[in-house]
Image 1 (cartoon, rainbow, N blue to C red):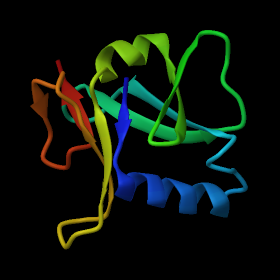
Image 2 (image 1 turned 90 degrees about the vertical axis):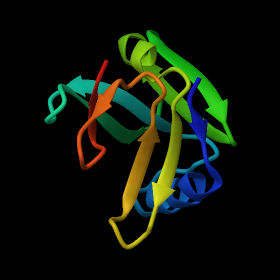
Image 3 (image 1 turned 180 degrees about the vertical axis):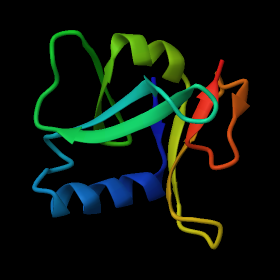
Image 4 (image 1 turned 60 degrees about the vertical axis):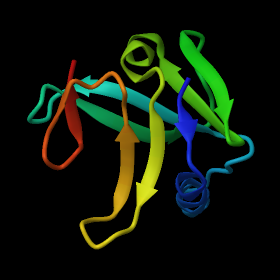
Length: 109
């Protein structure tokens, strides 16, 4: 399962609304793809529906869809949002990552 902090939930609700999605009925699609300076990078999008092969669950009233392969890399991850001086954006606190890059957008196992 992936957890969603209160600050991430608030930012997701704002962004989803701006893009024509509703946090109470649409999905946040989280995944992992090849790339980035550490080998794997995070992917976050919005979707109107989940597909049959997705792992679907709810965290902090946010509906999350994750493809099964990505789910193996993301189990236990906490999605947070940072708006501090060092940068603004979503942060994936992933307990499975053995190494991350300096920007925090990619990782390796």
